[in-house]
Image 1: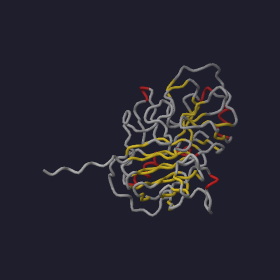
Image 2: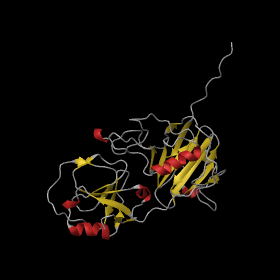
Image 3: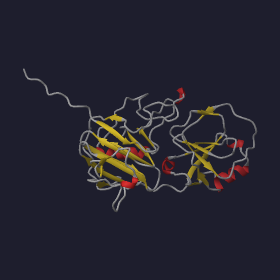
Image 4: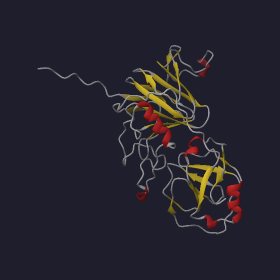
Length: 320
């Protein structure tokens, strides 16, 4: 009798350094707002779709959203990865820094010598926007974003954590989906679905300088001077912004109507104005209801995915 060969260990992605905030994301879970569940998903859905195409995945496969500081990952099987979004240094190697492996708590930046601090022995550079072949056991190191704020990483086969309500996305507000990654986590990988894309380089579209805003439903709660300020002055992204919303600082928007609203529905891109008069633009992990008036809705919040604290934001619309 012939025995079938024993199956090897399931392929996984090991998290050696999670960085400031790295989460699993796909195209989100739309259609559940009536139950109080926001769509979540990648803050730049097109960037994650592109990364998936580059490695041969379906566009709705789950990948990683990496915020600002980069991360370090190890693949337990040979595969292909691709990064899109914010430009960053990428290295692929065996993880050695001198004779000390990545993740050793006893090593600090003082041990990193040479013309490019932080480049490990045996590393080879990679590029954002191209499919990158990774040997089994190799470490993929993504450096801090040089411009912008977030980078998306796709792995051939996709991140195969269990879906919740049809999506593998982490929702940082409700807690649905897998928690934000921590050092030492491991993530299951799916089976590759297709060949990597035959491309040399991809170029992302430039971010628009202003956000298109449609007034309503509660613009009548604000004075004419408030609307002039909204469209006529620049705002700055606050350091307390996150995946729930981009908080802005600038000229406060005075109200024409006093009092409070009963809670009502919120959508992606809603610009809510709390009592301090500073606008708040809701992003992918936004709540589905709120009690402050919404002065308008931004058509496309994708540029805010790369808006660091201090980034200038202006509004325009068909009304002005």
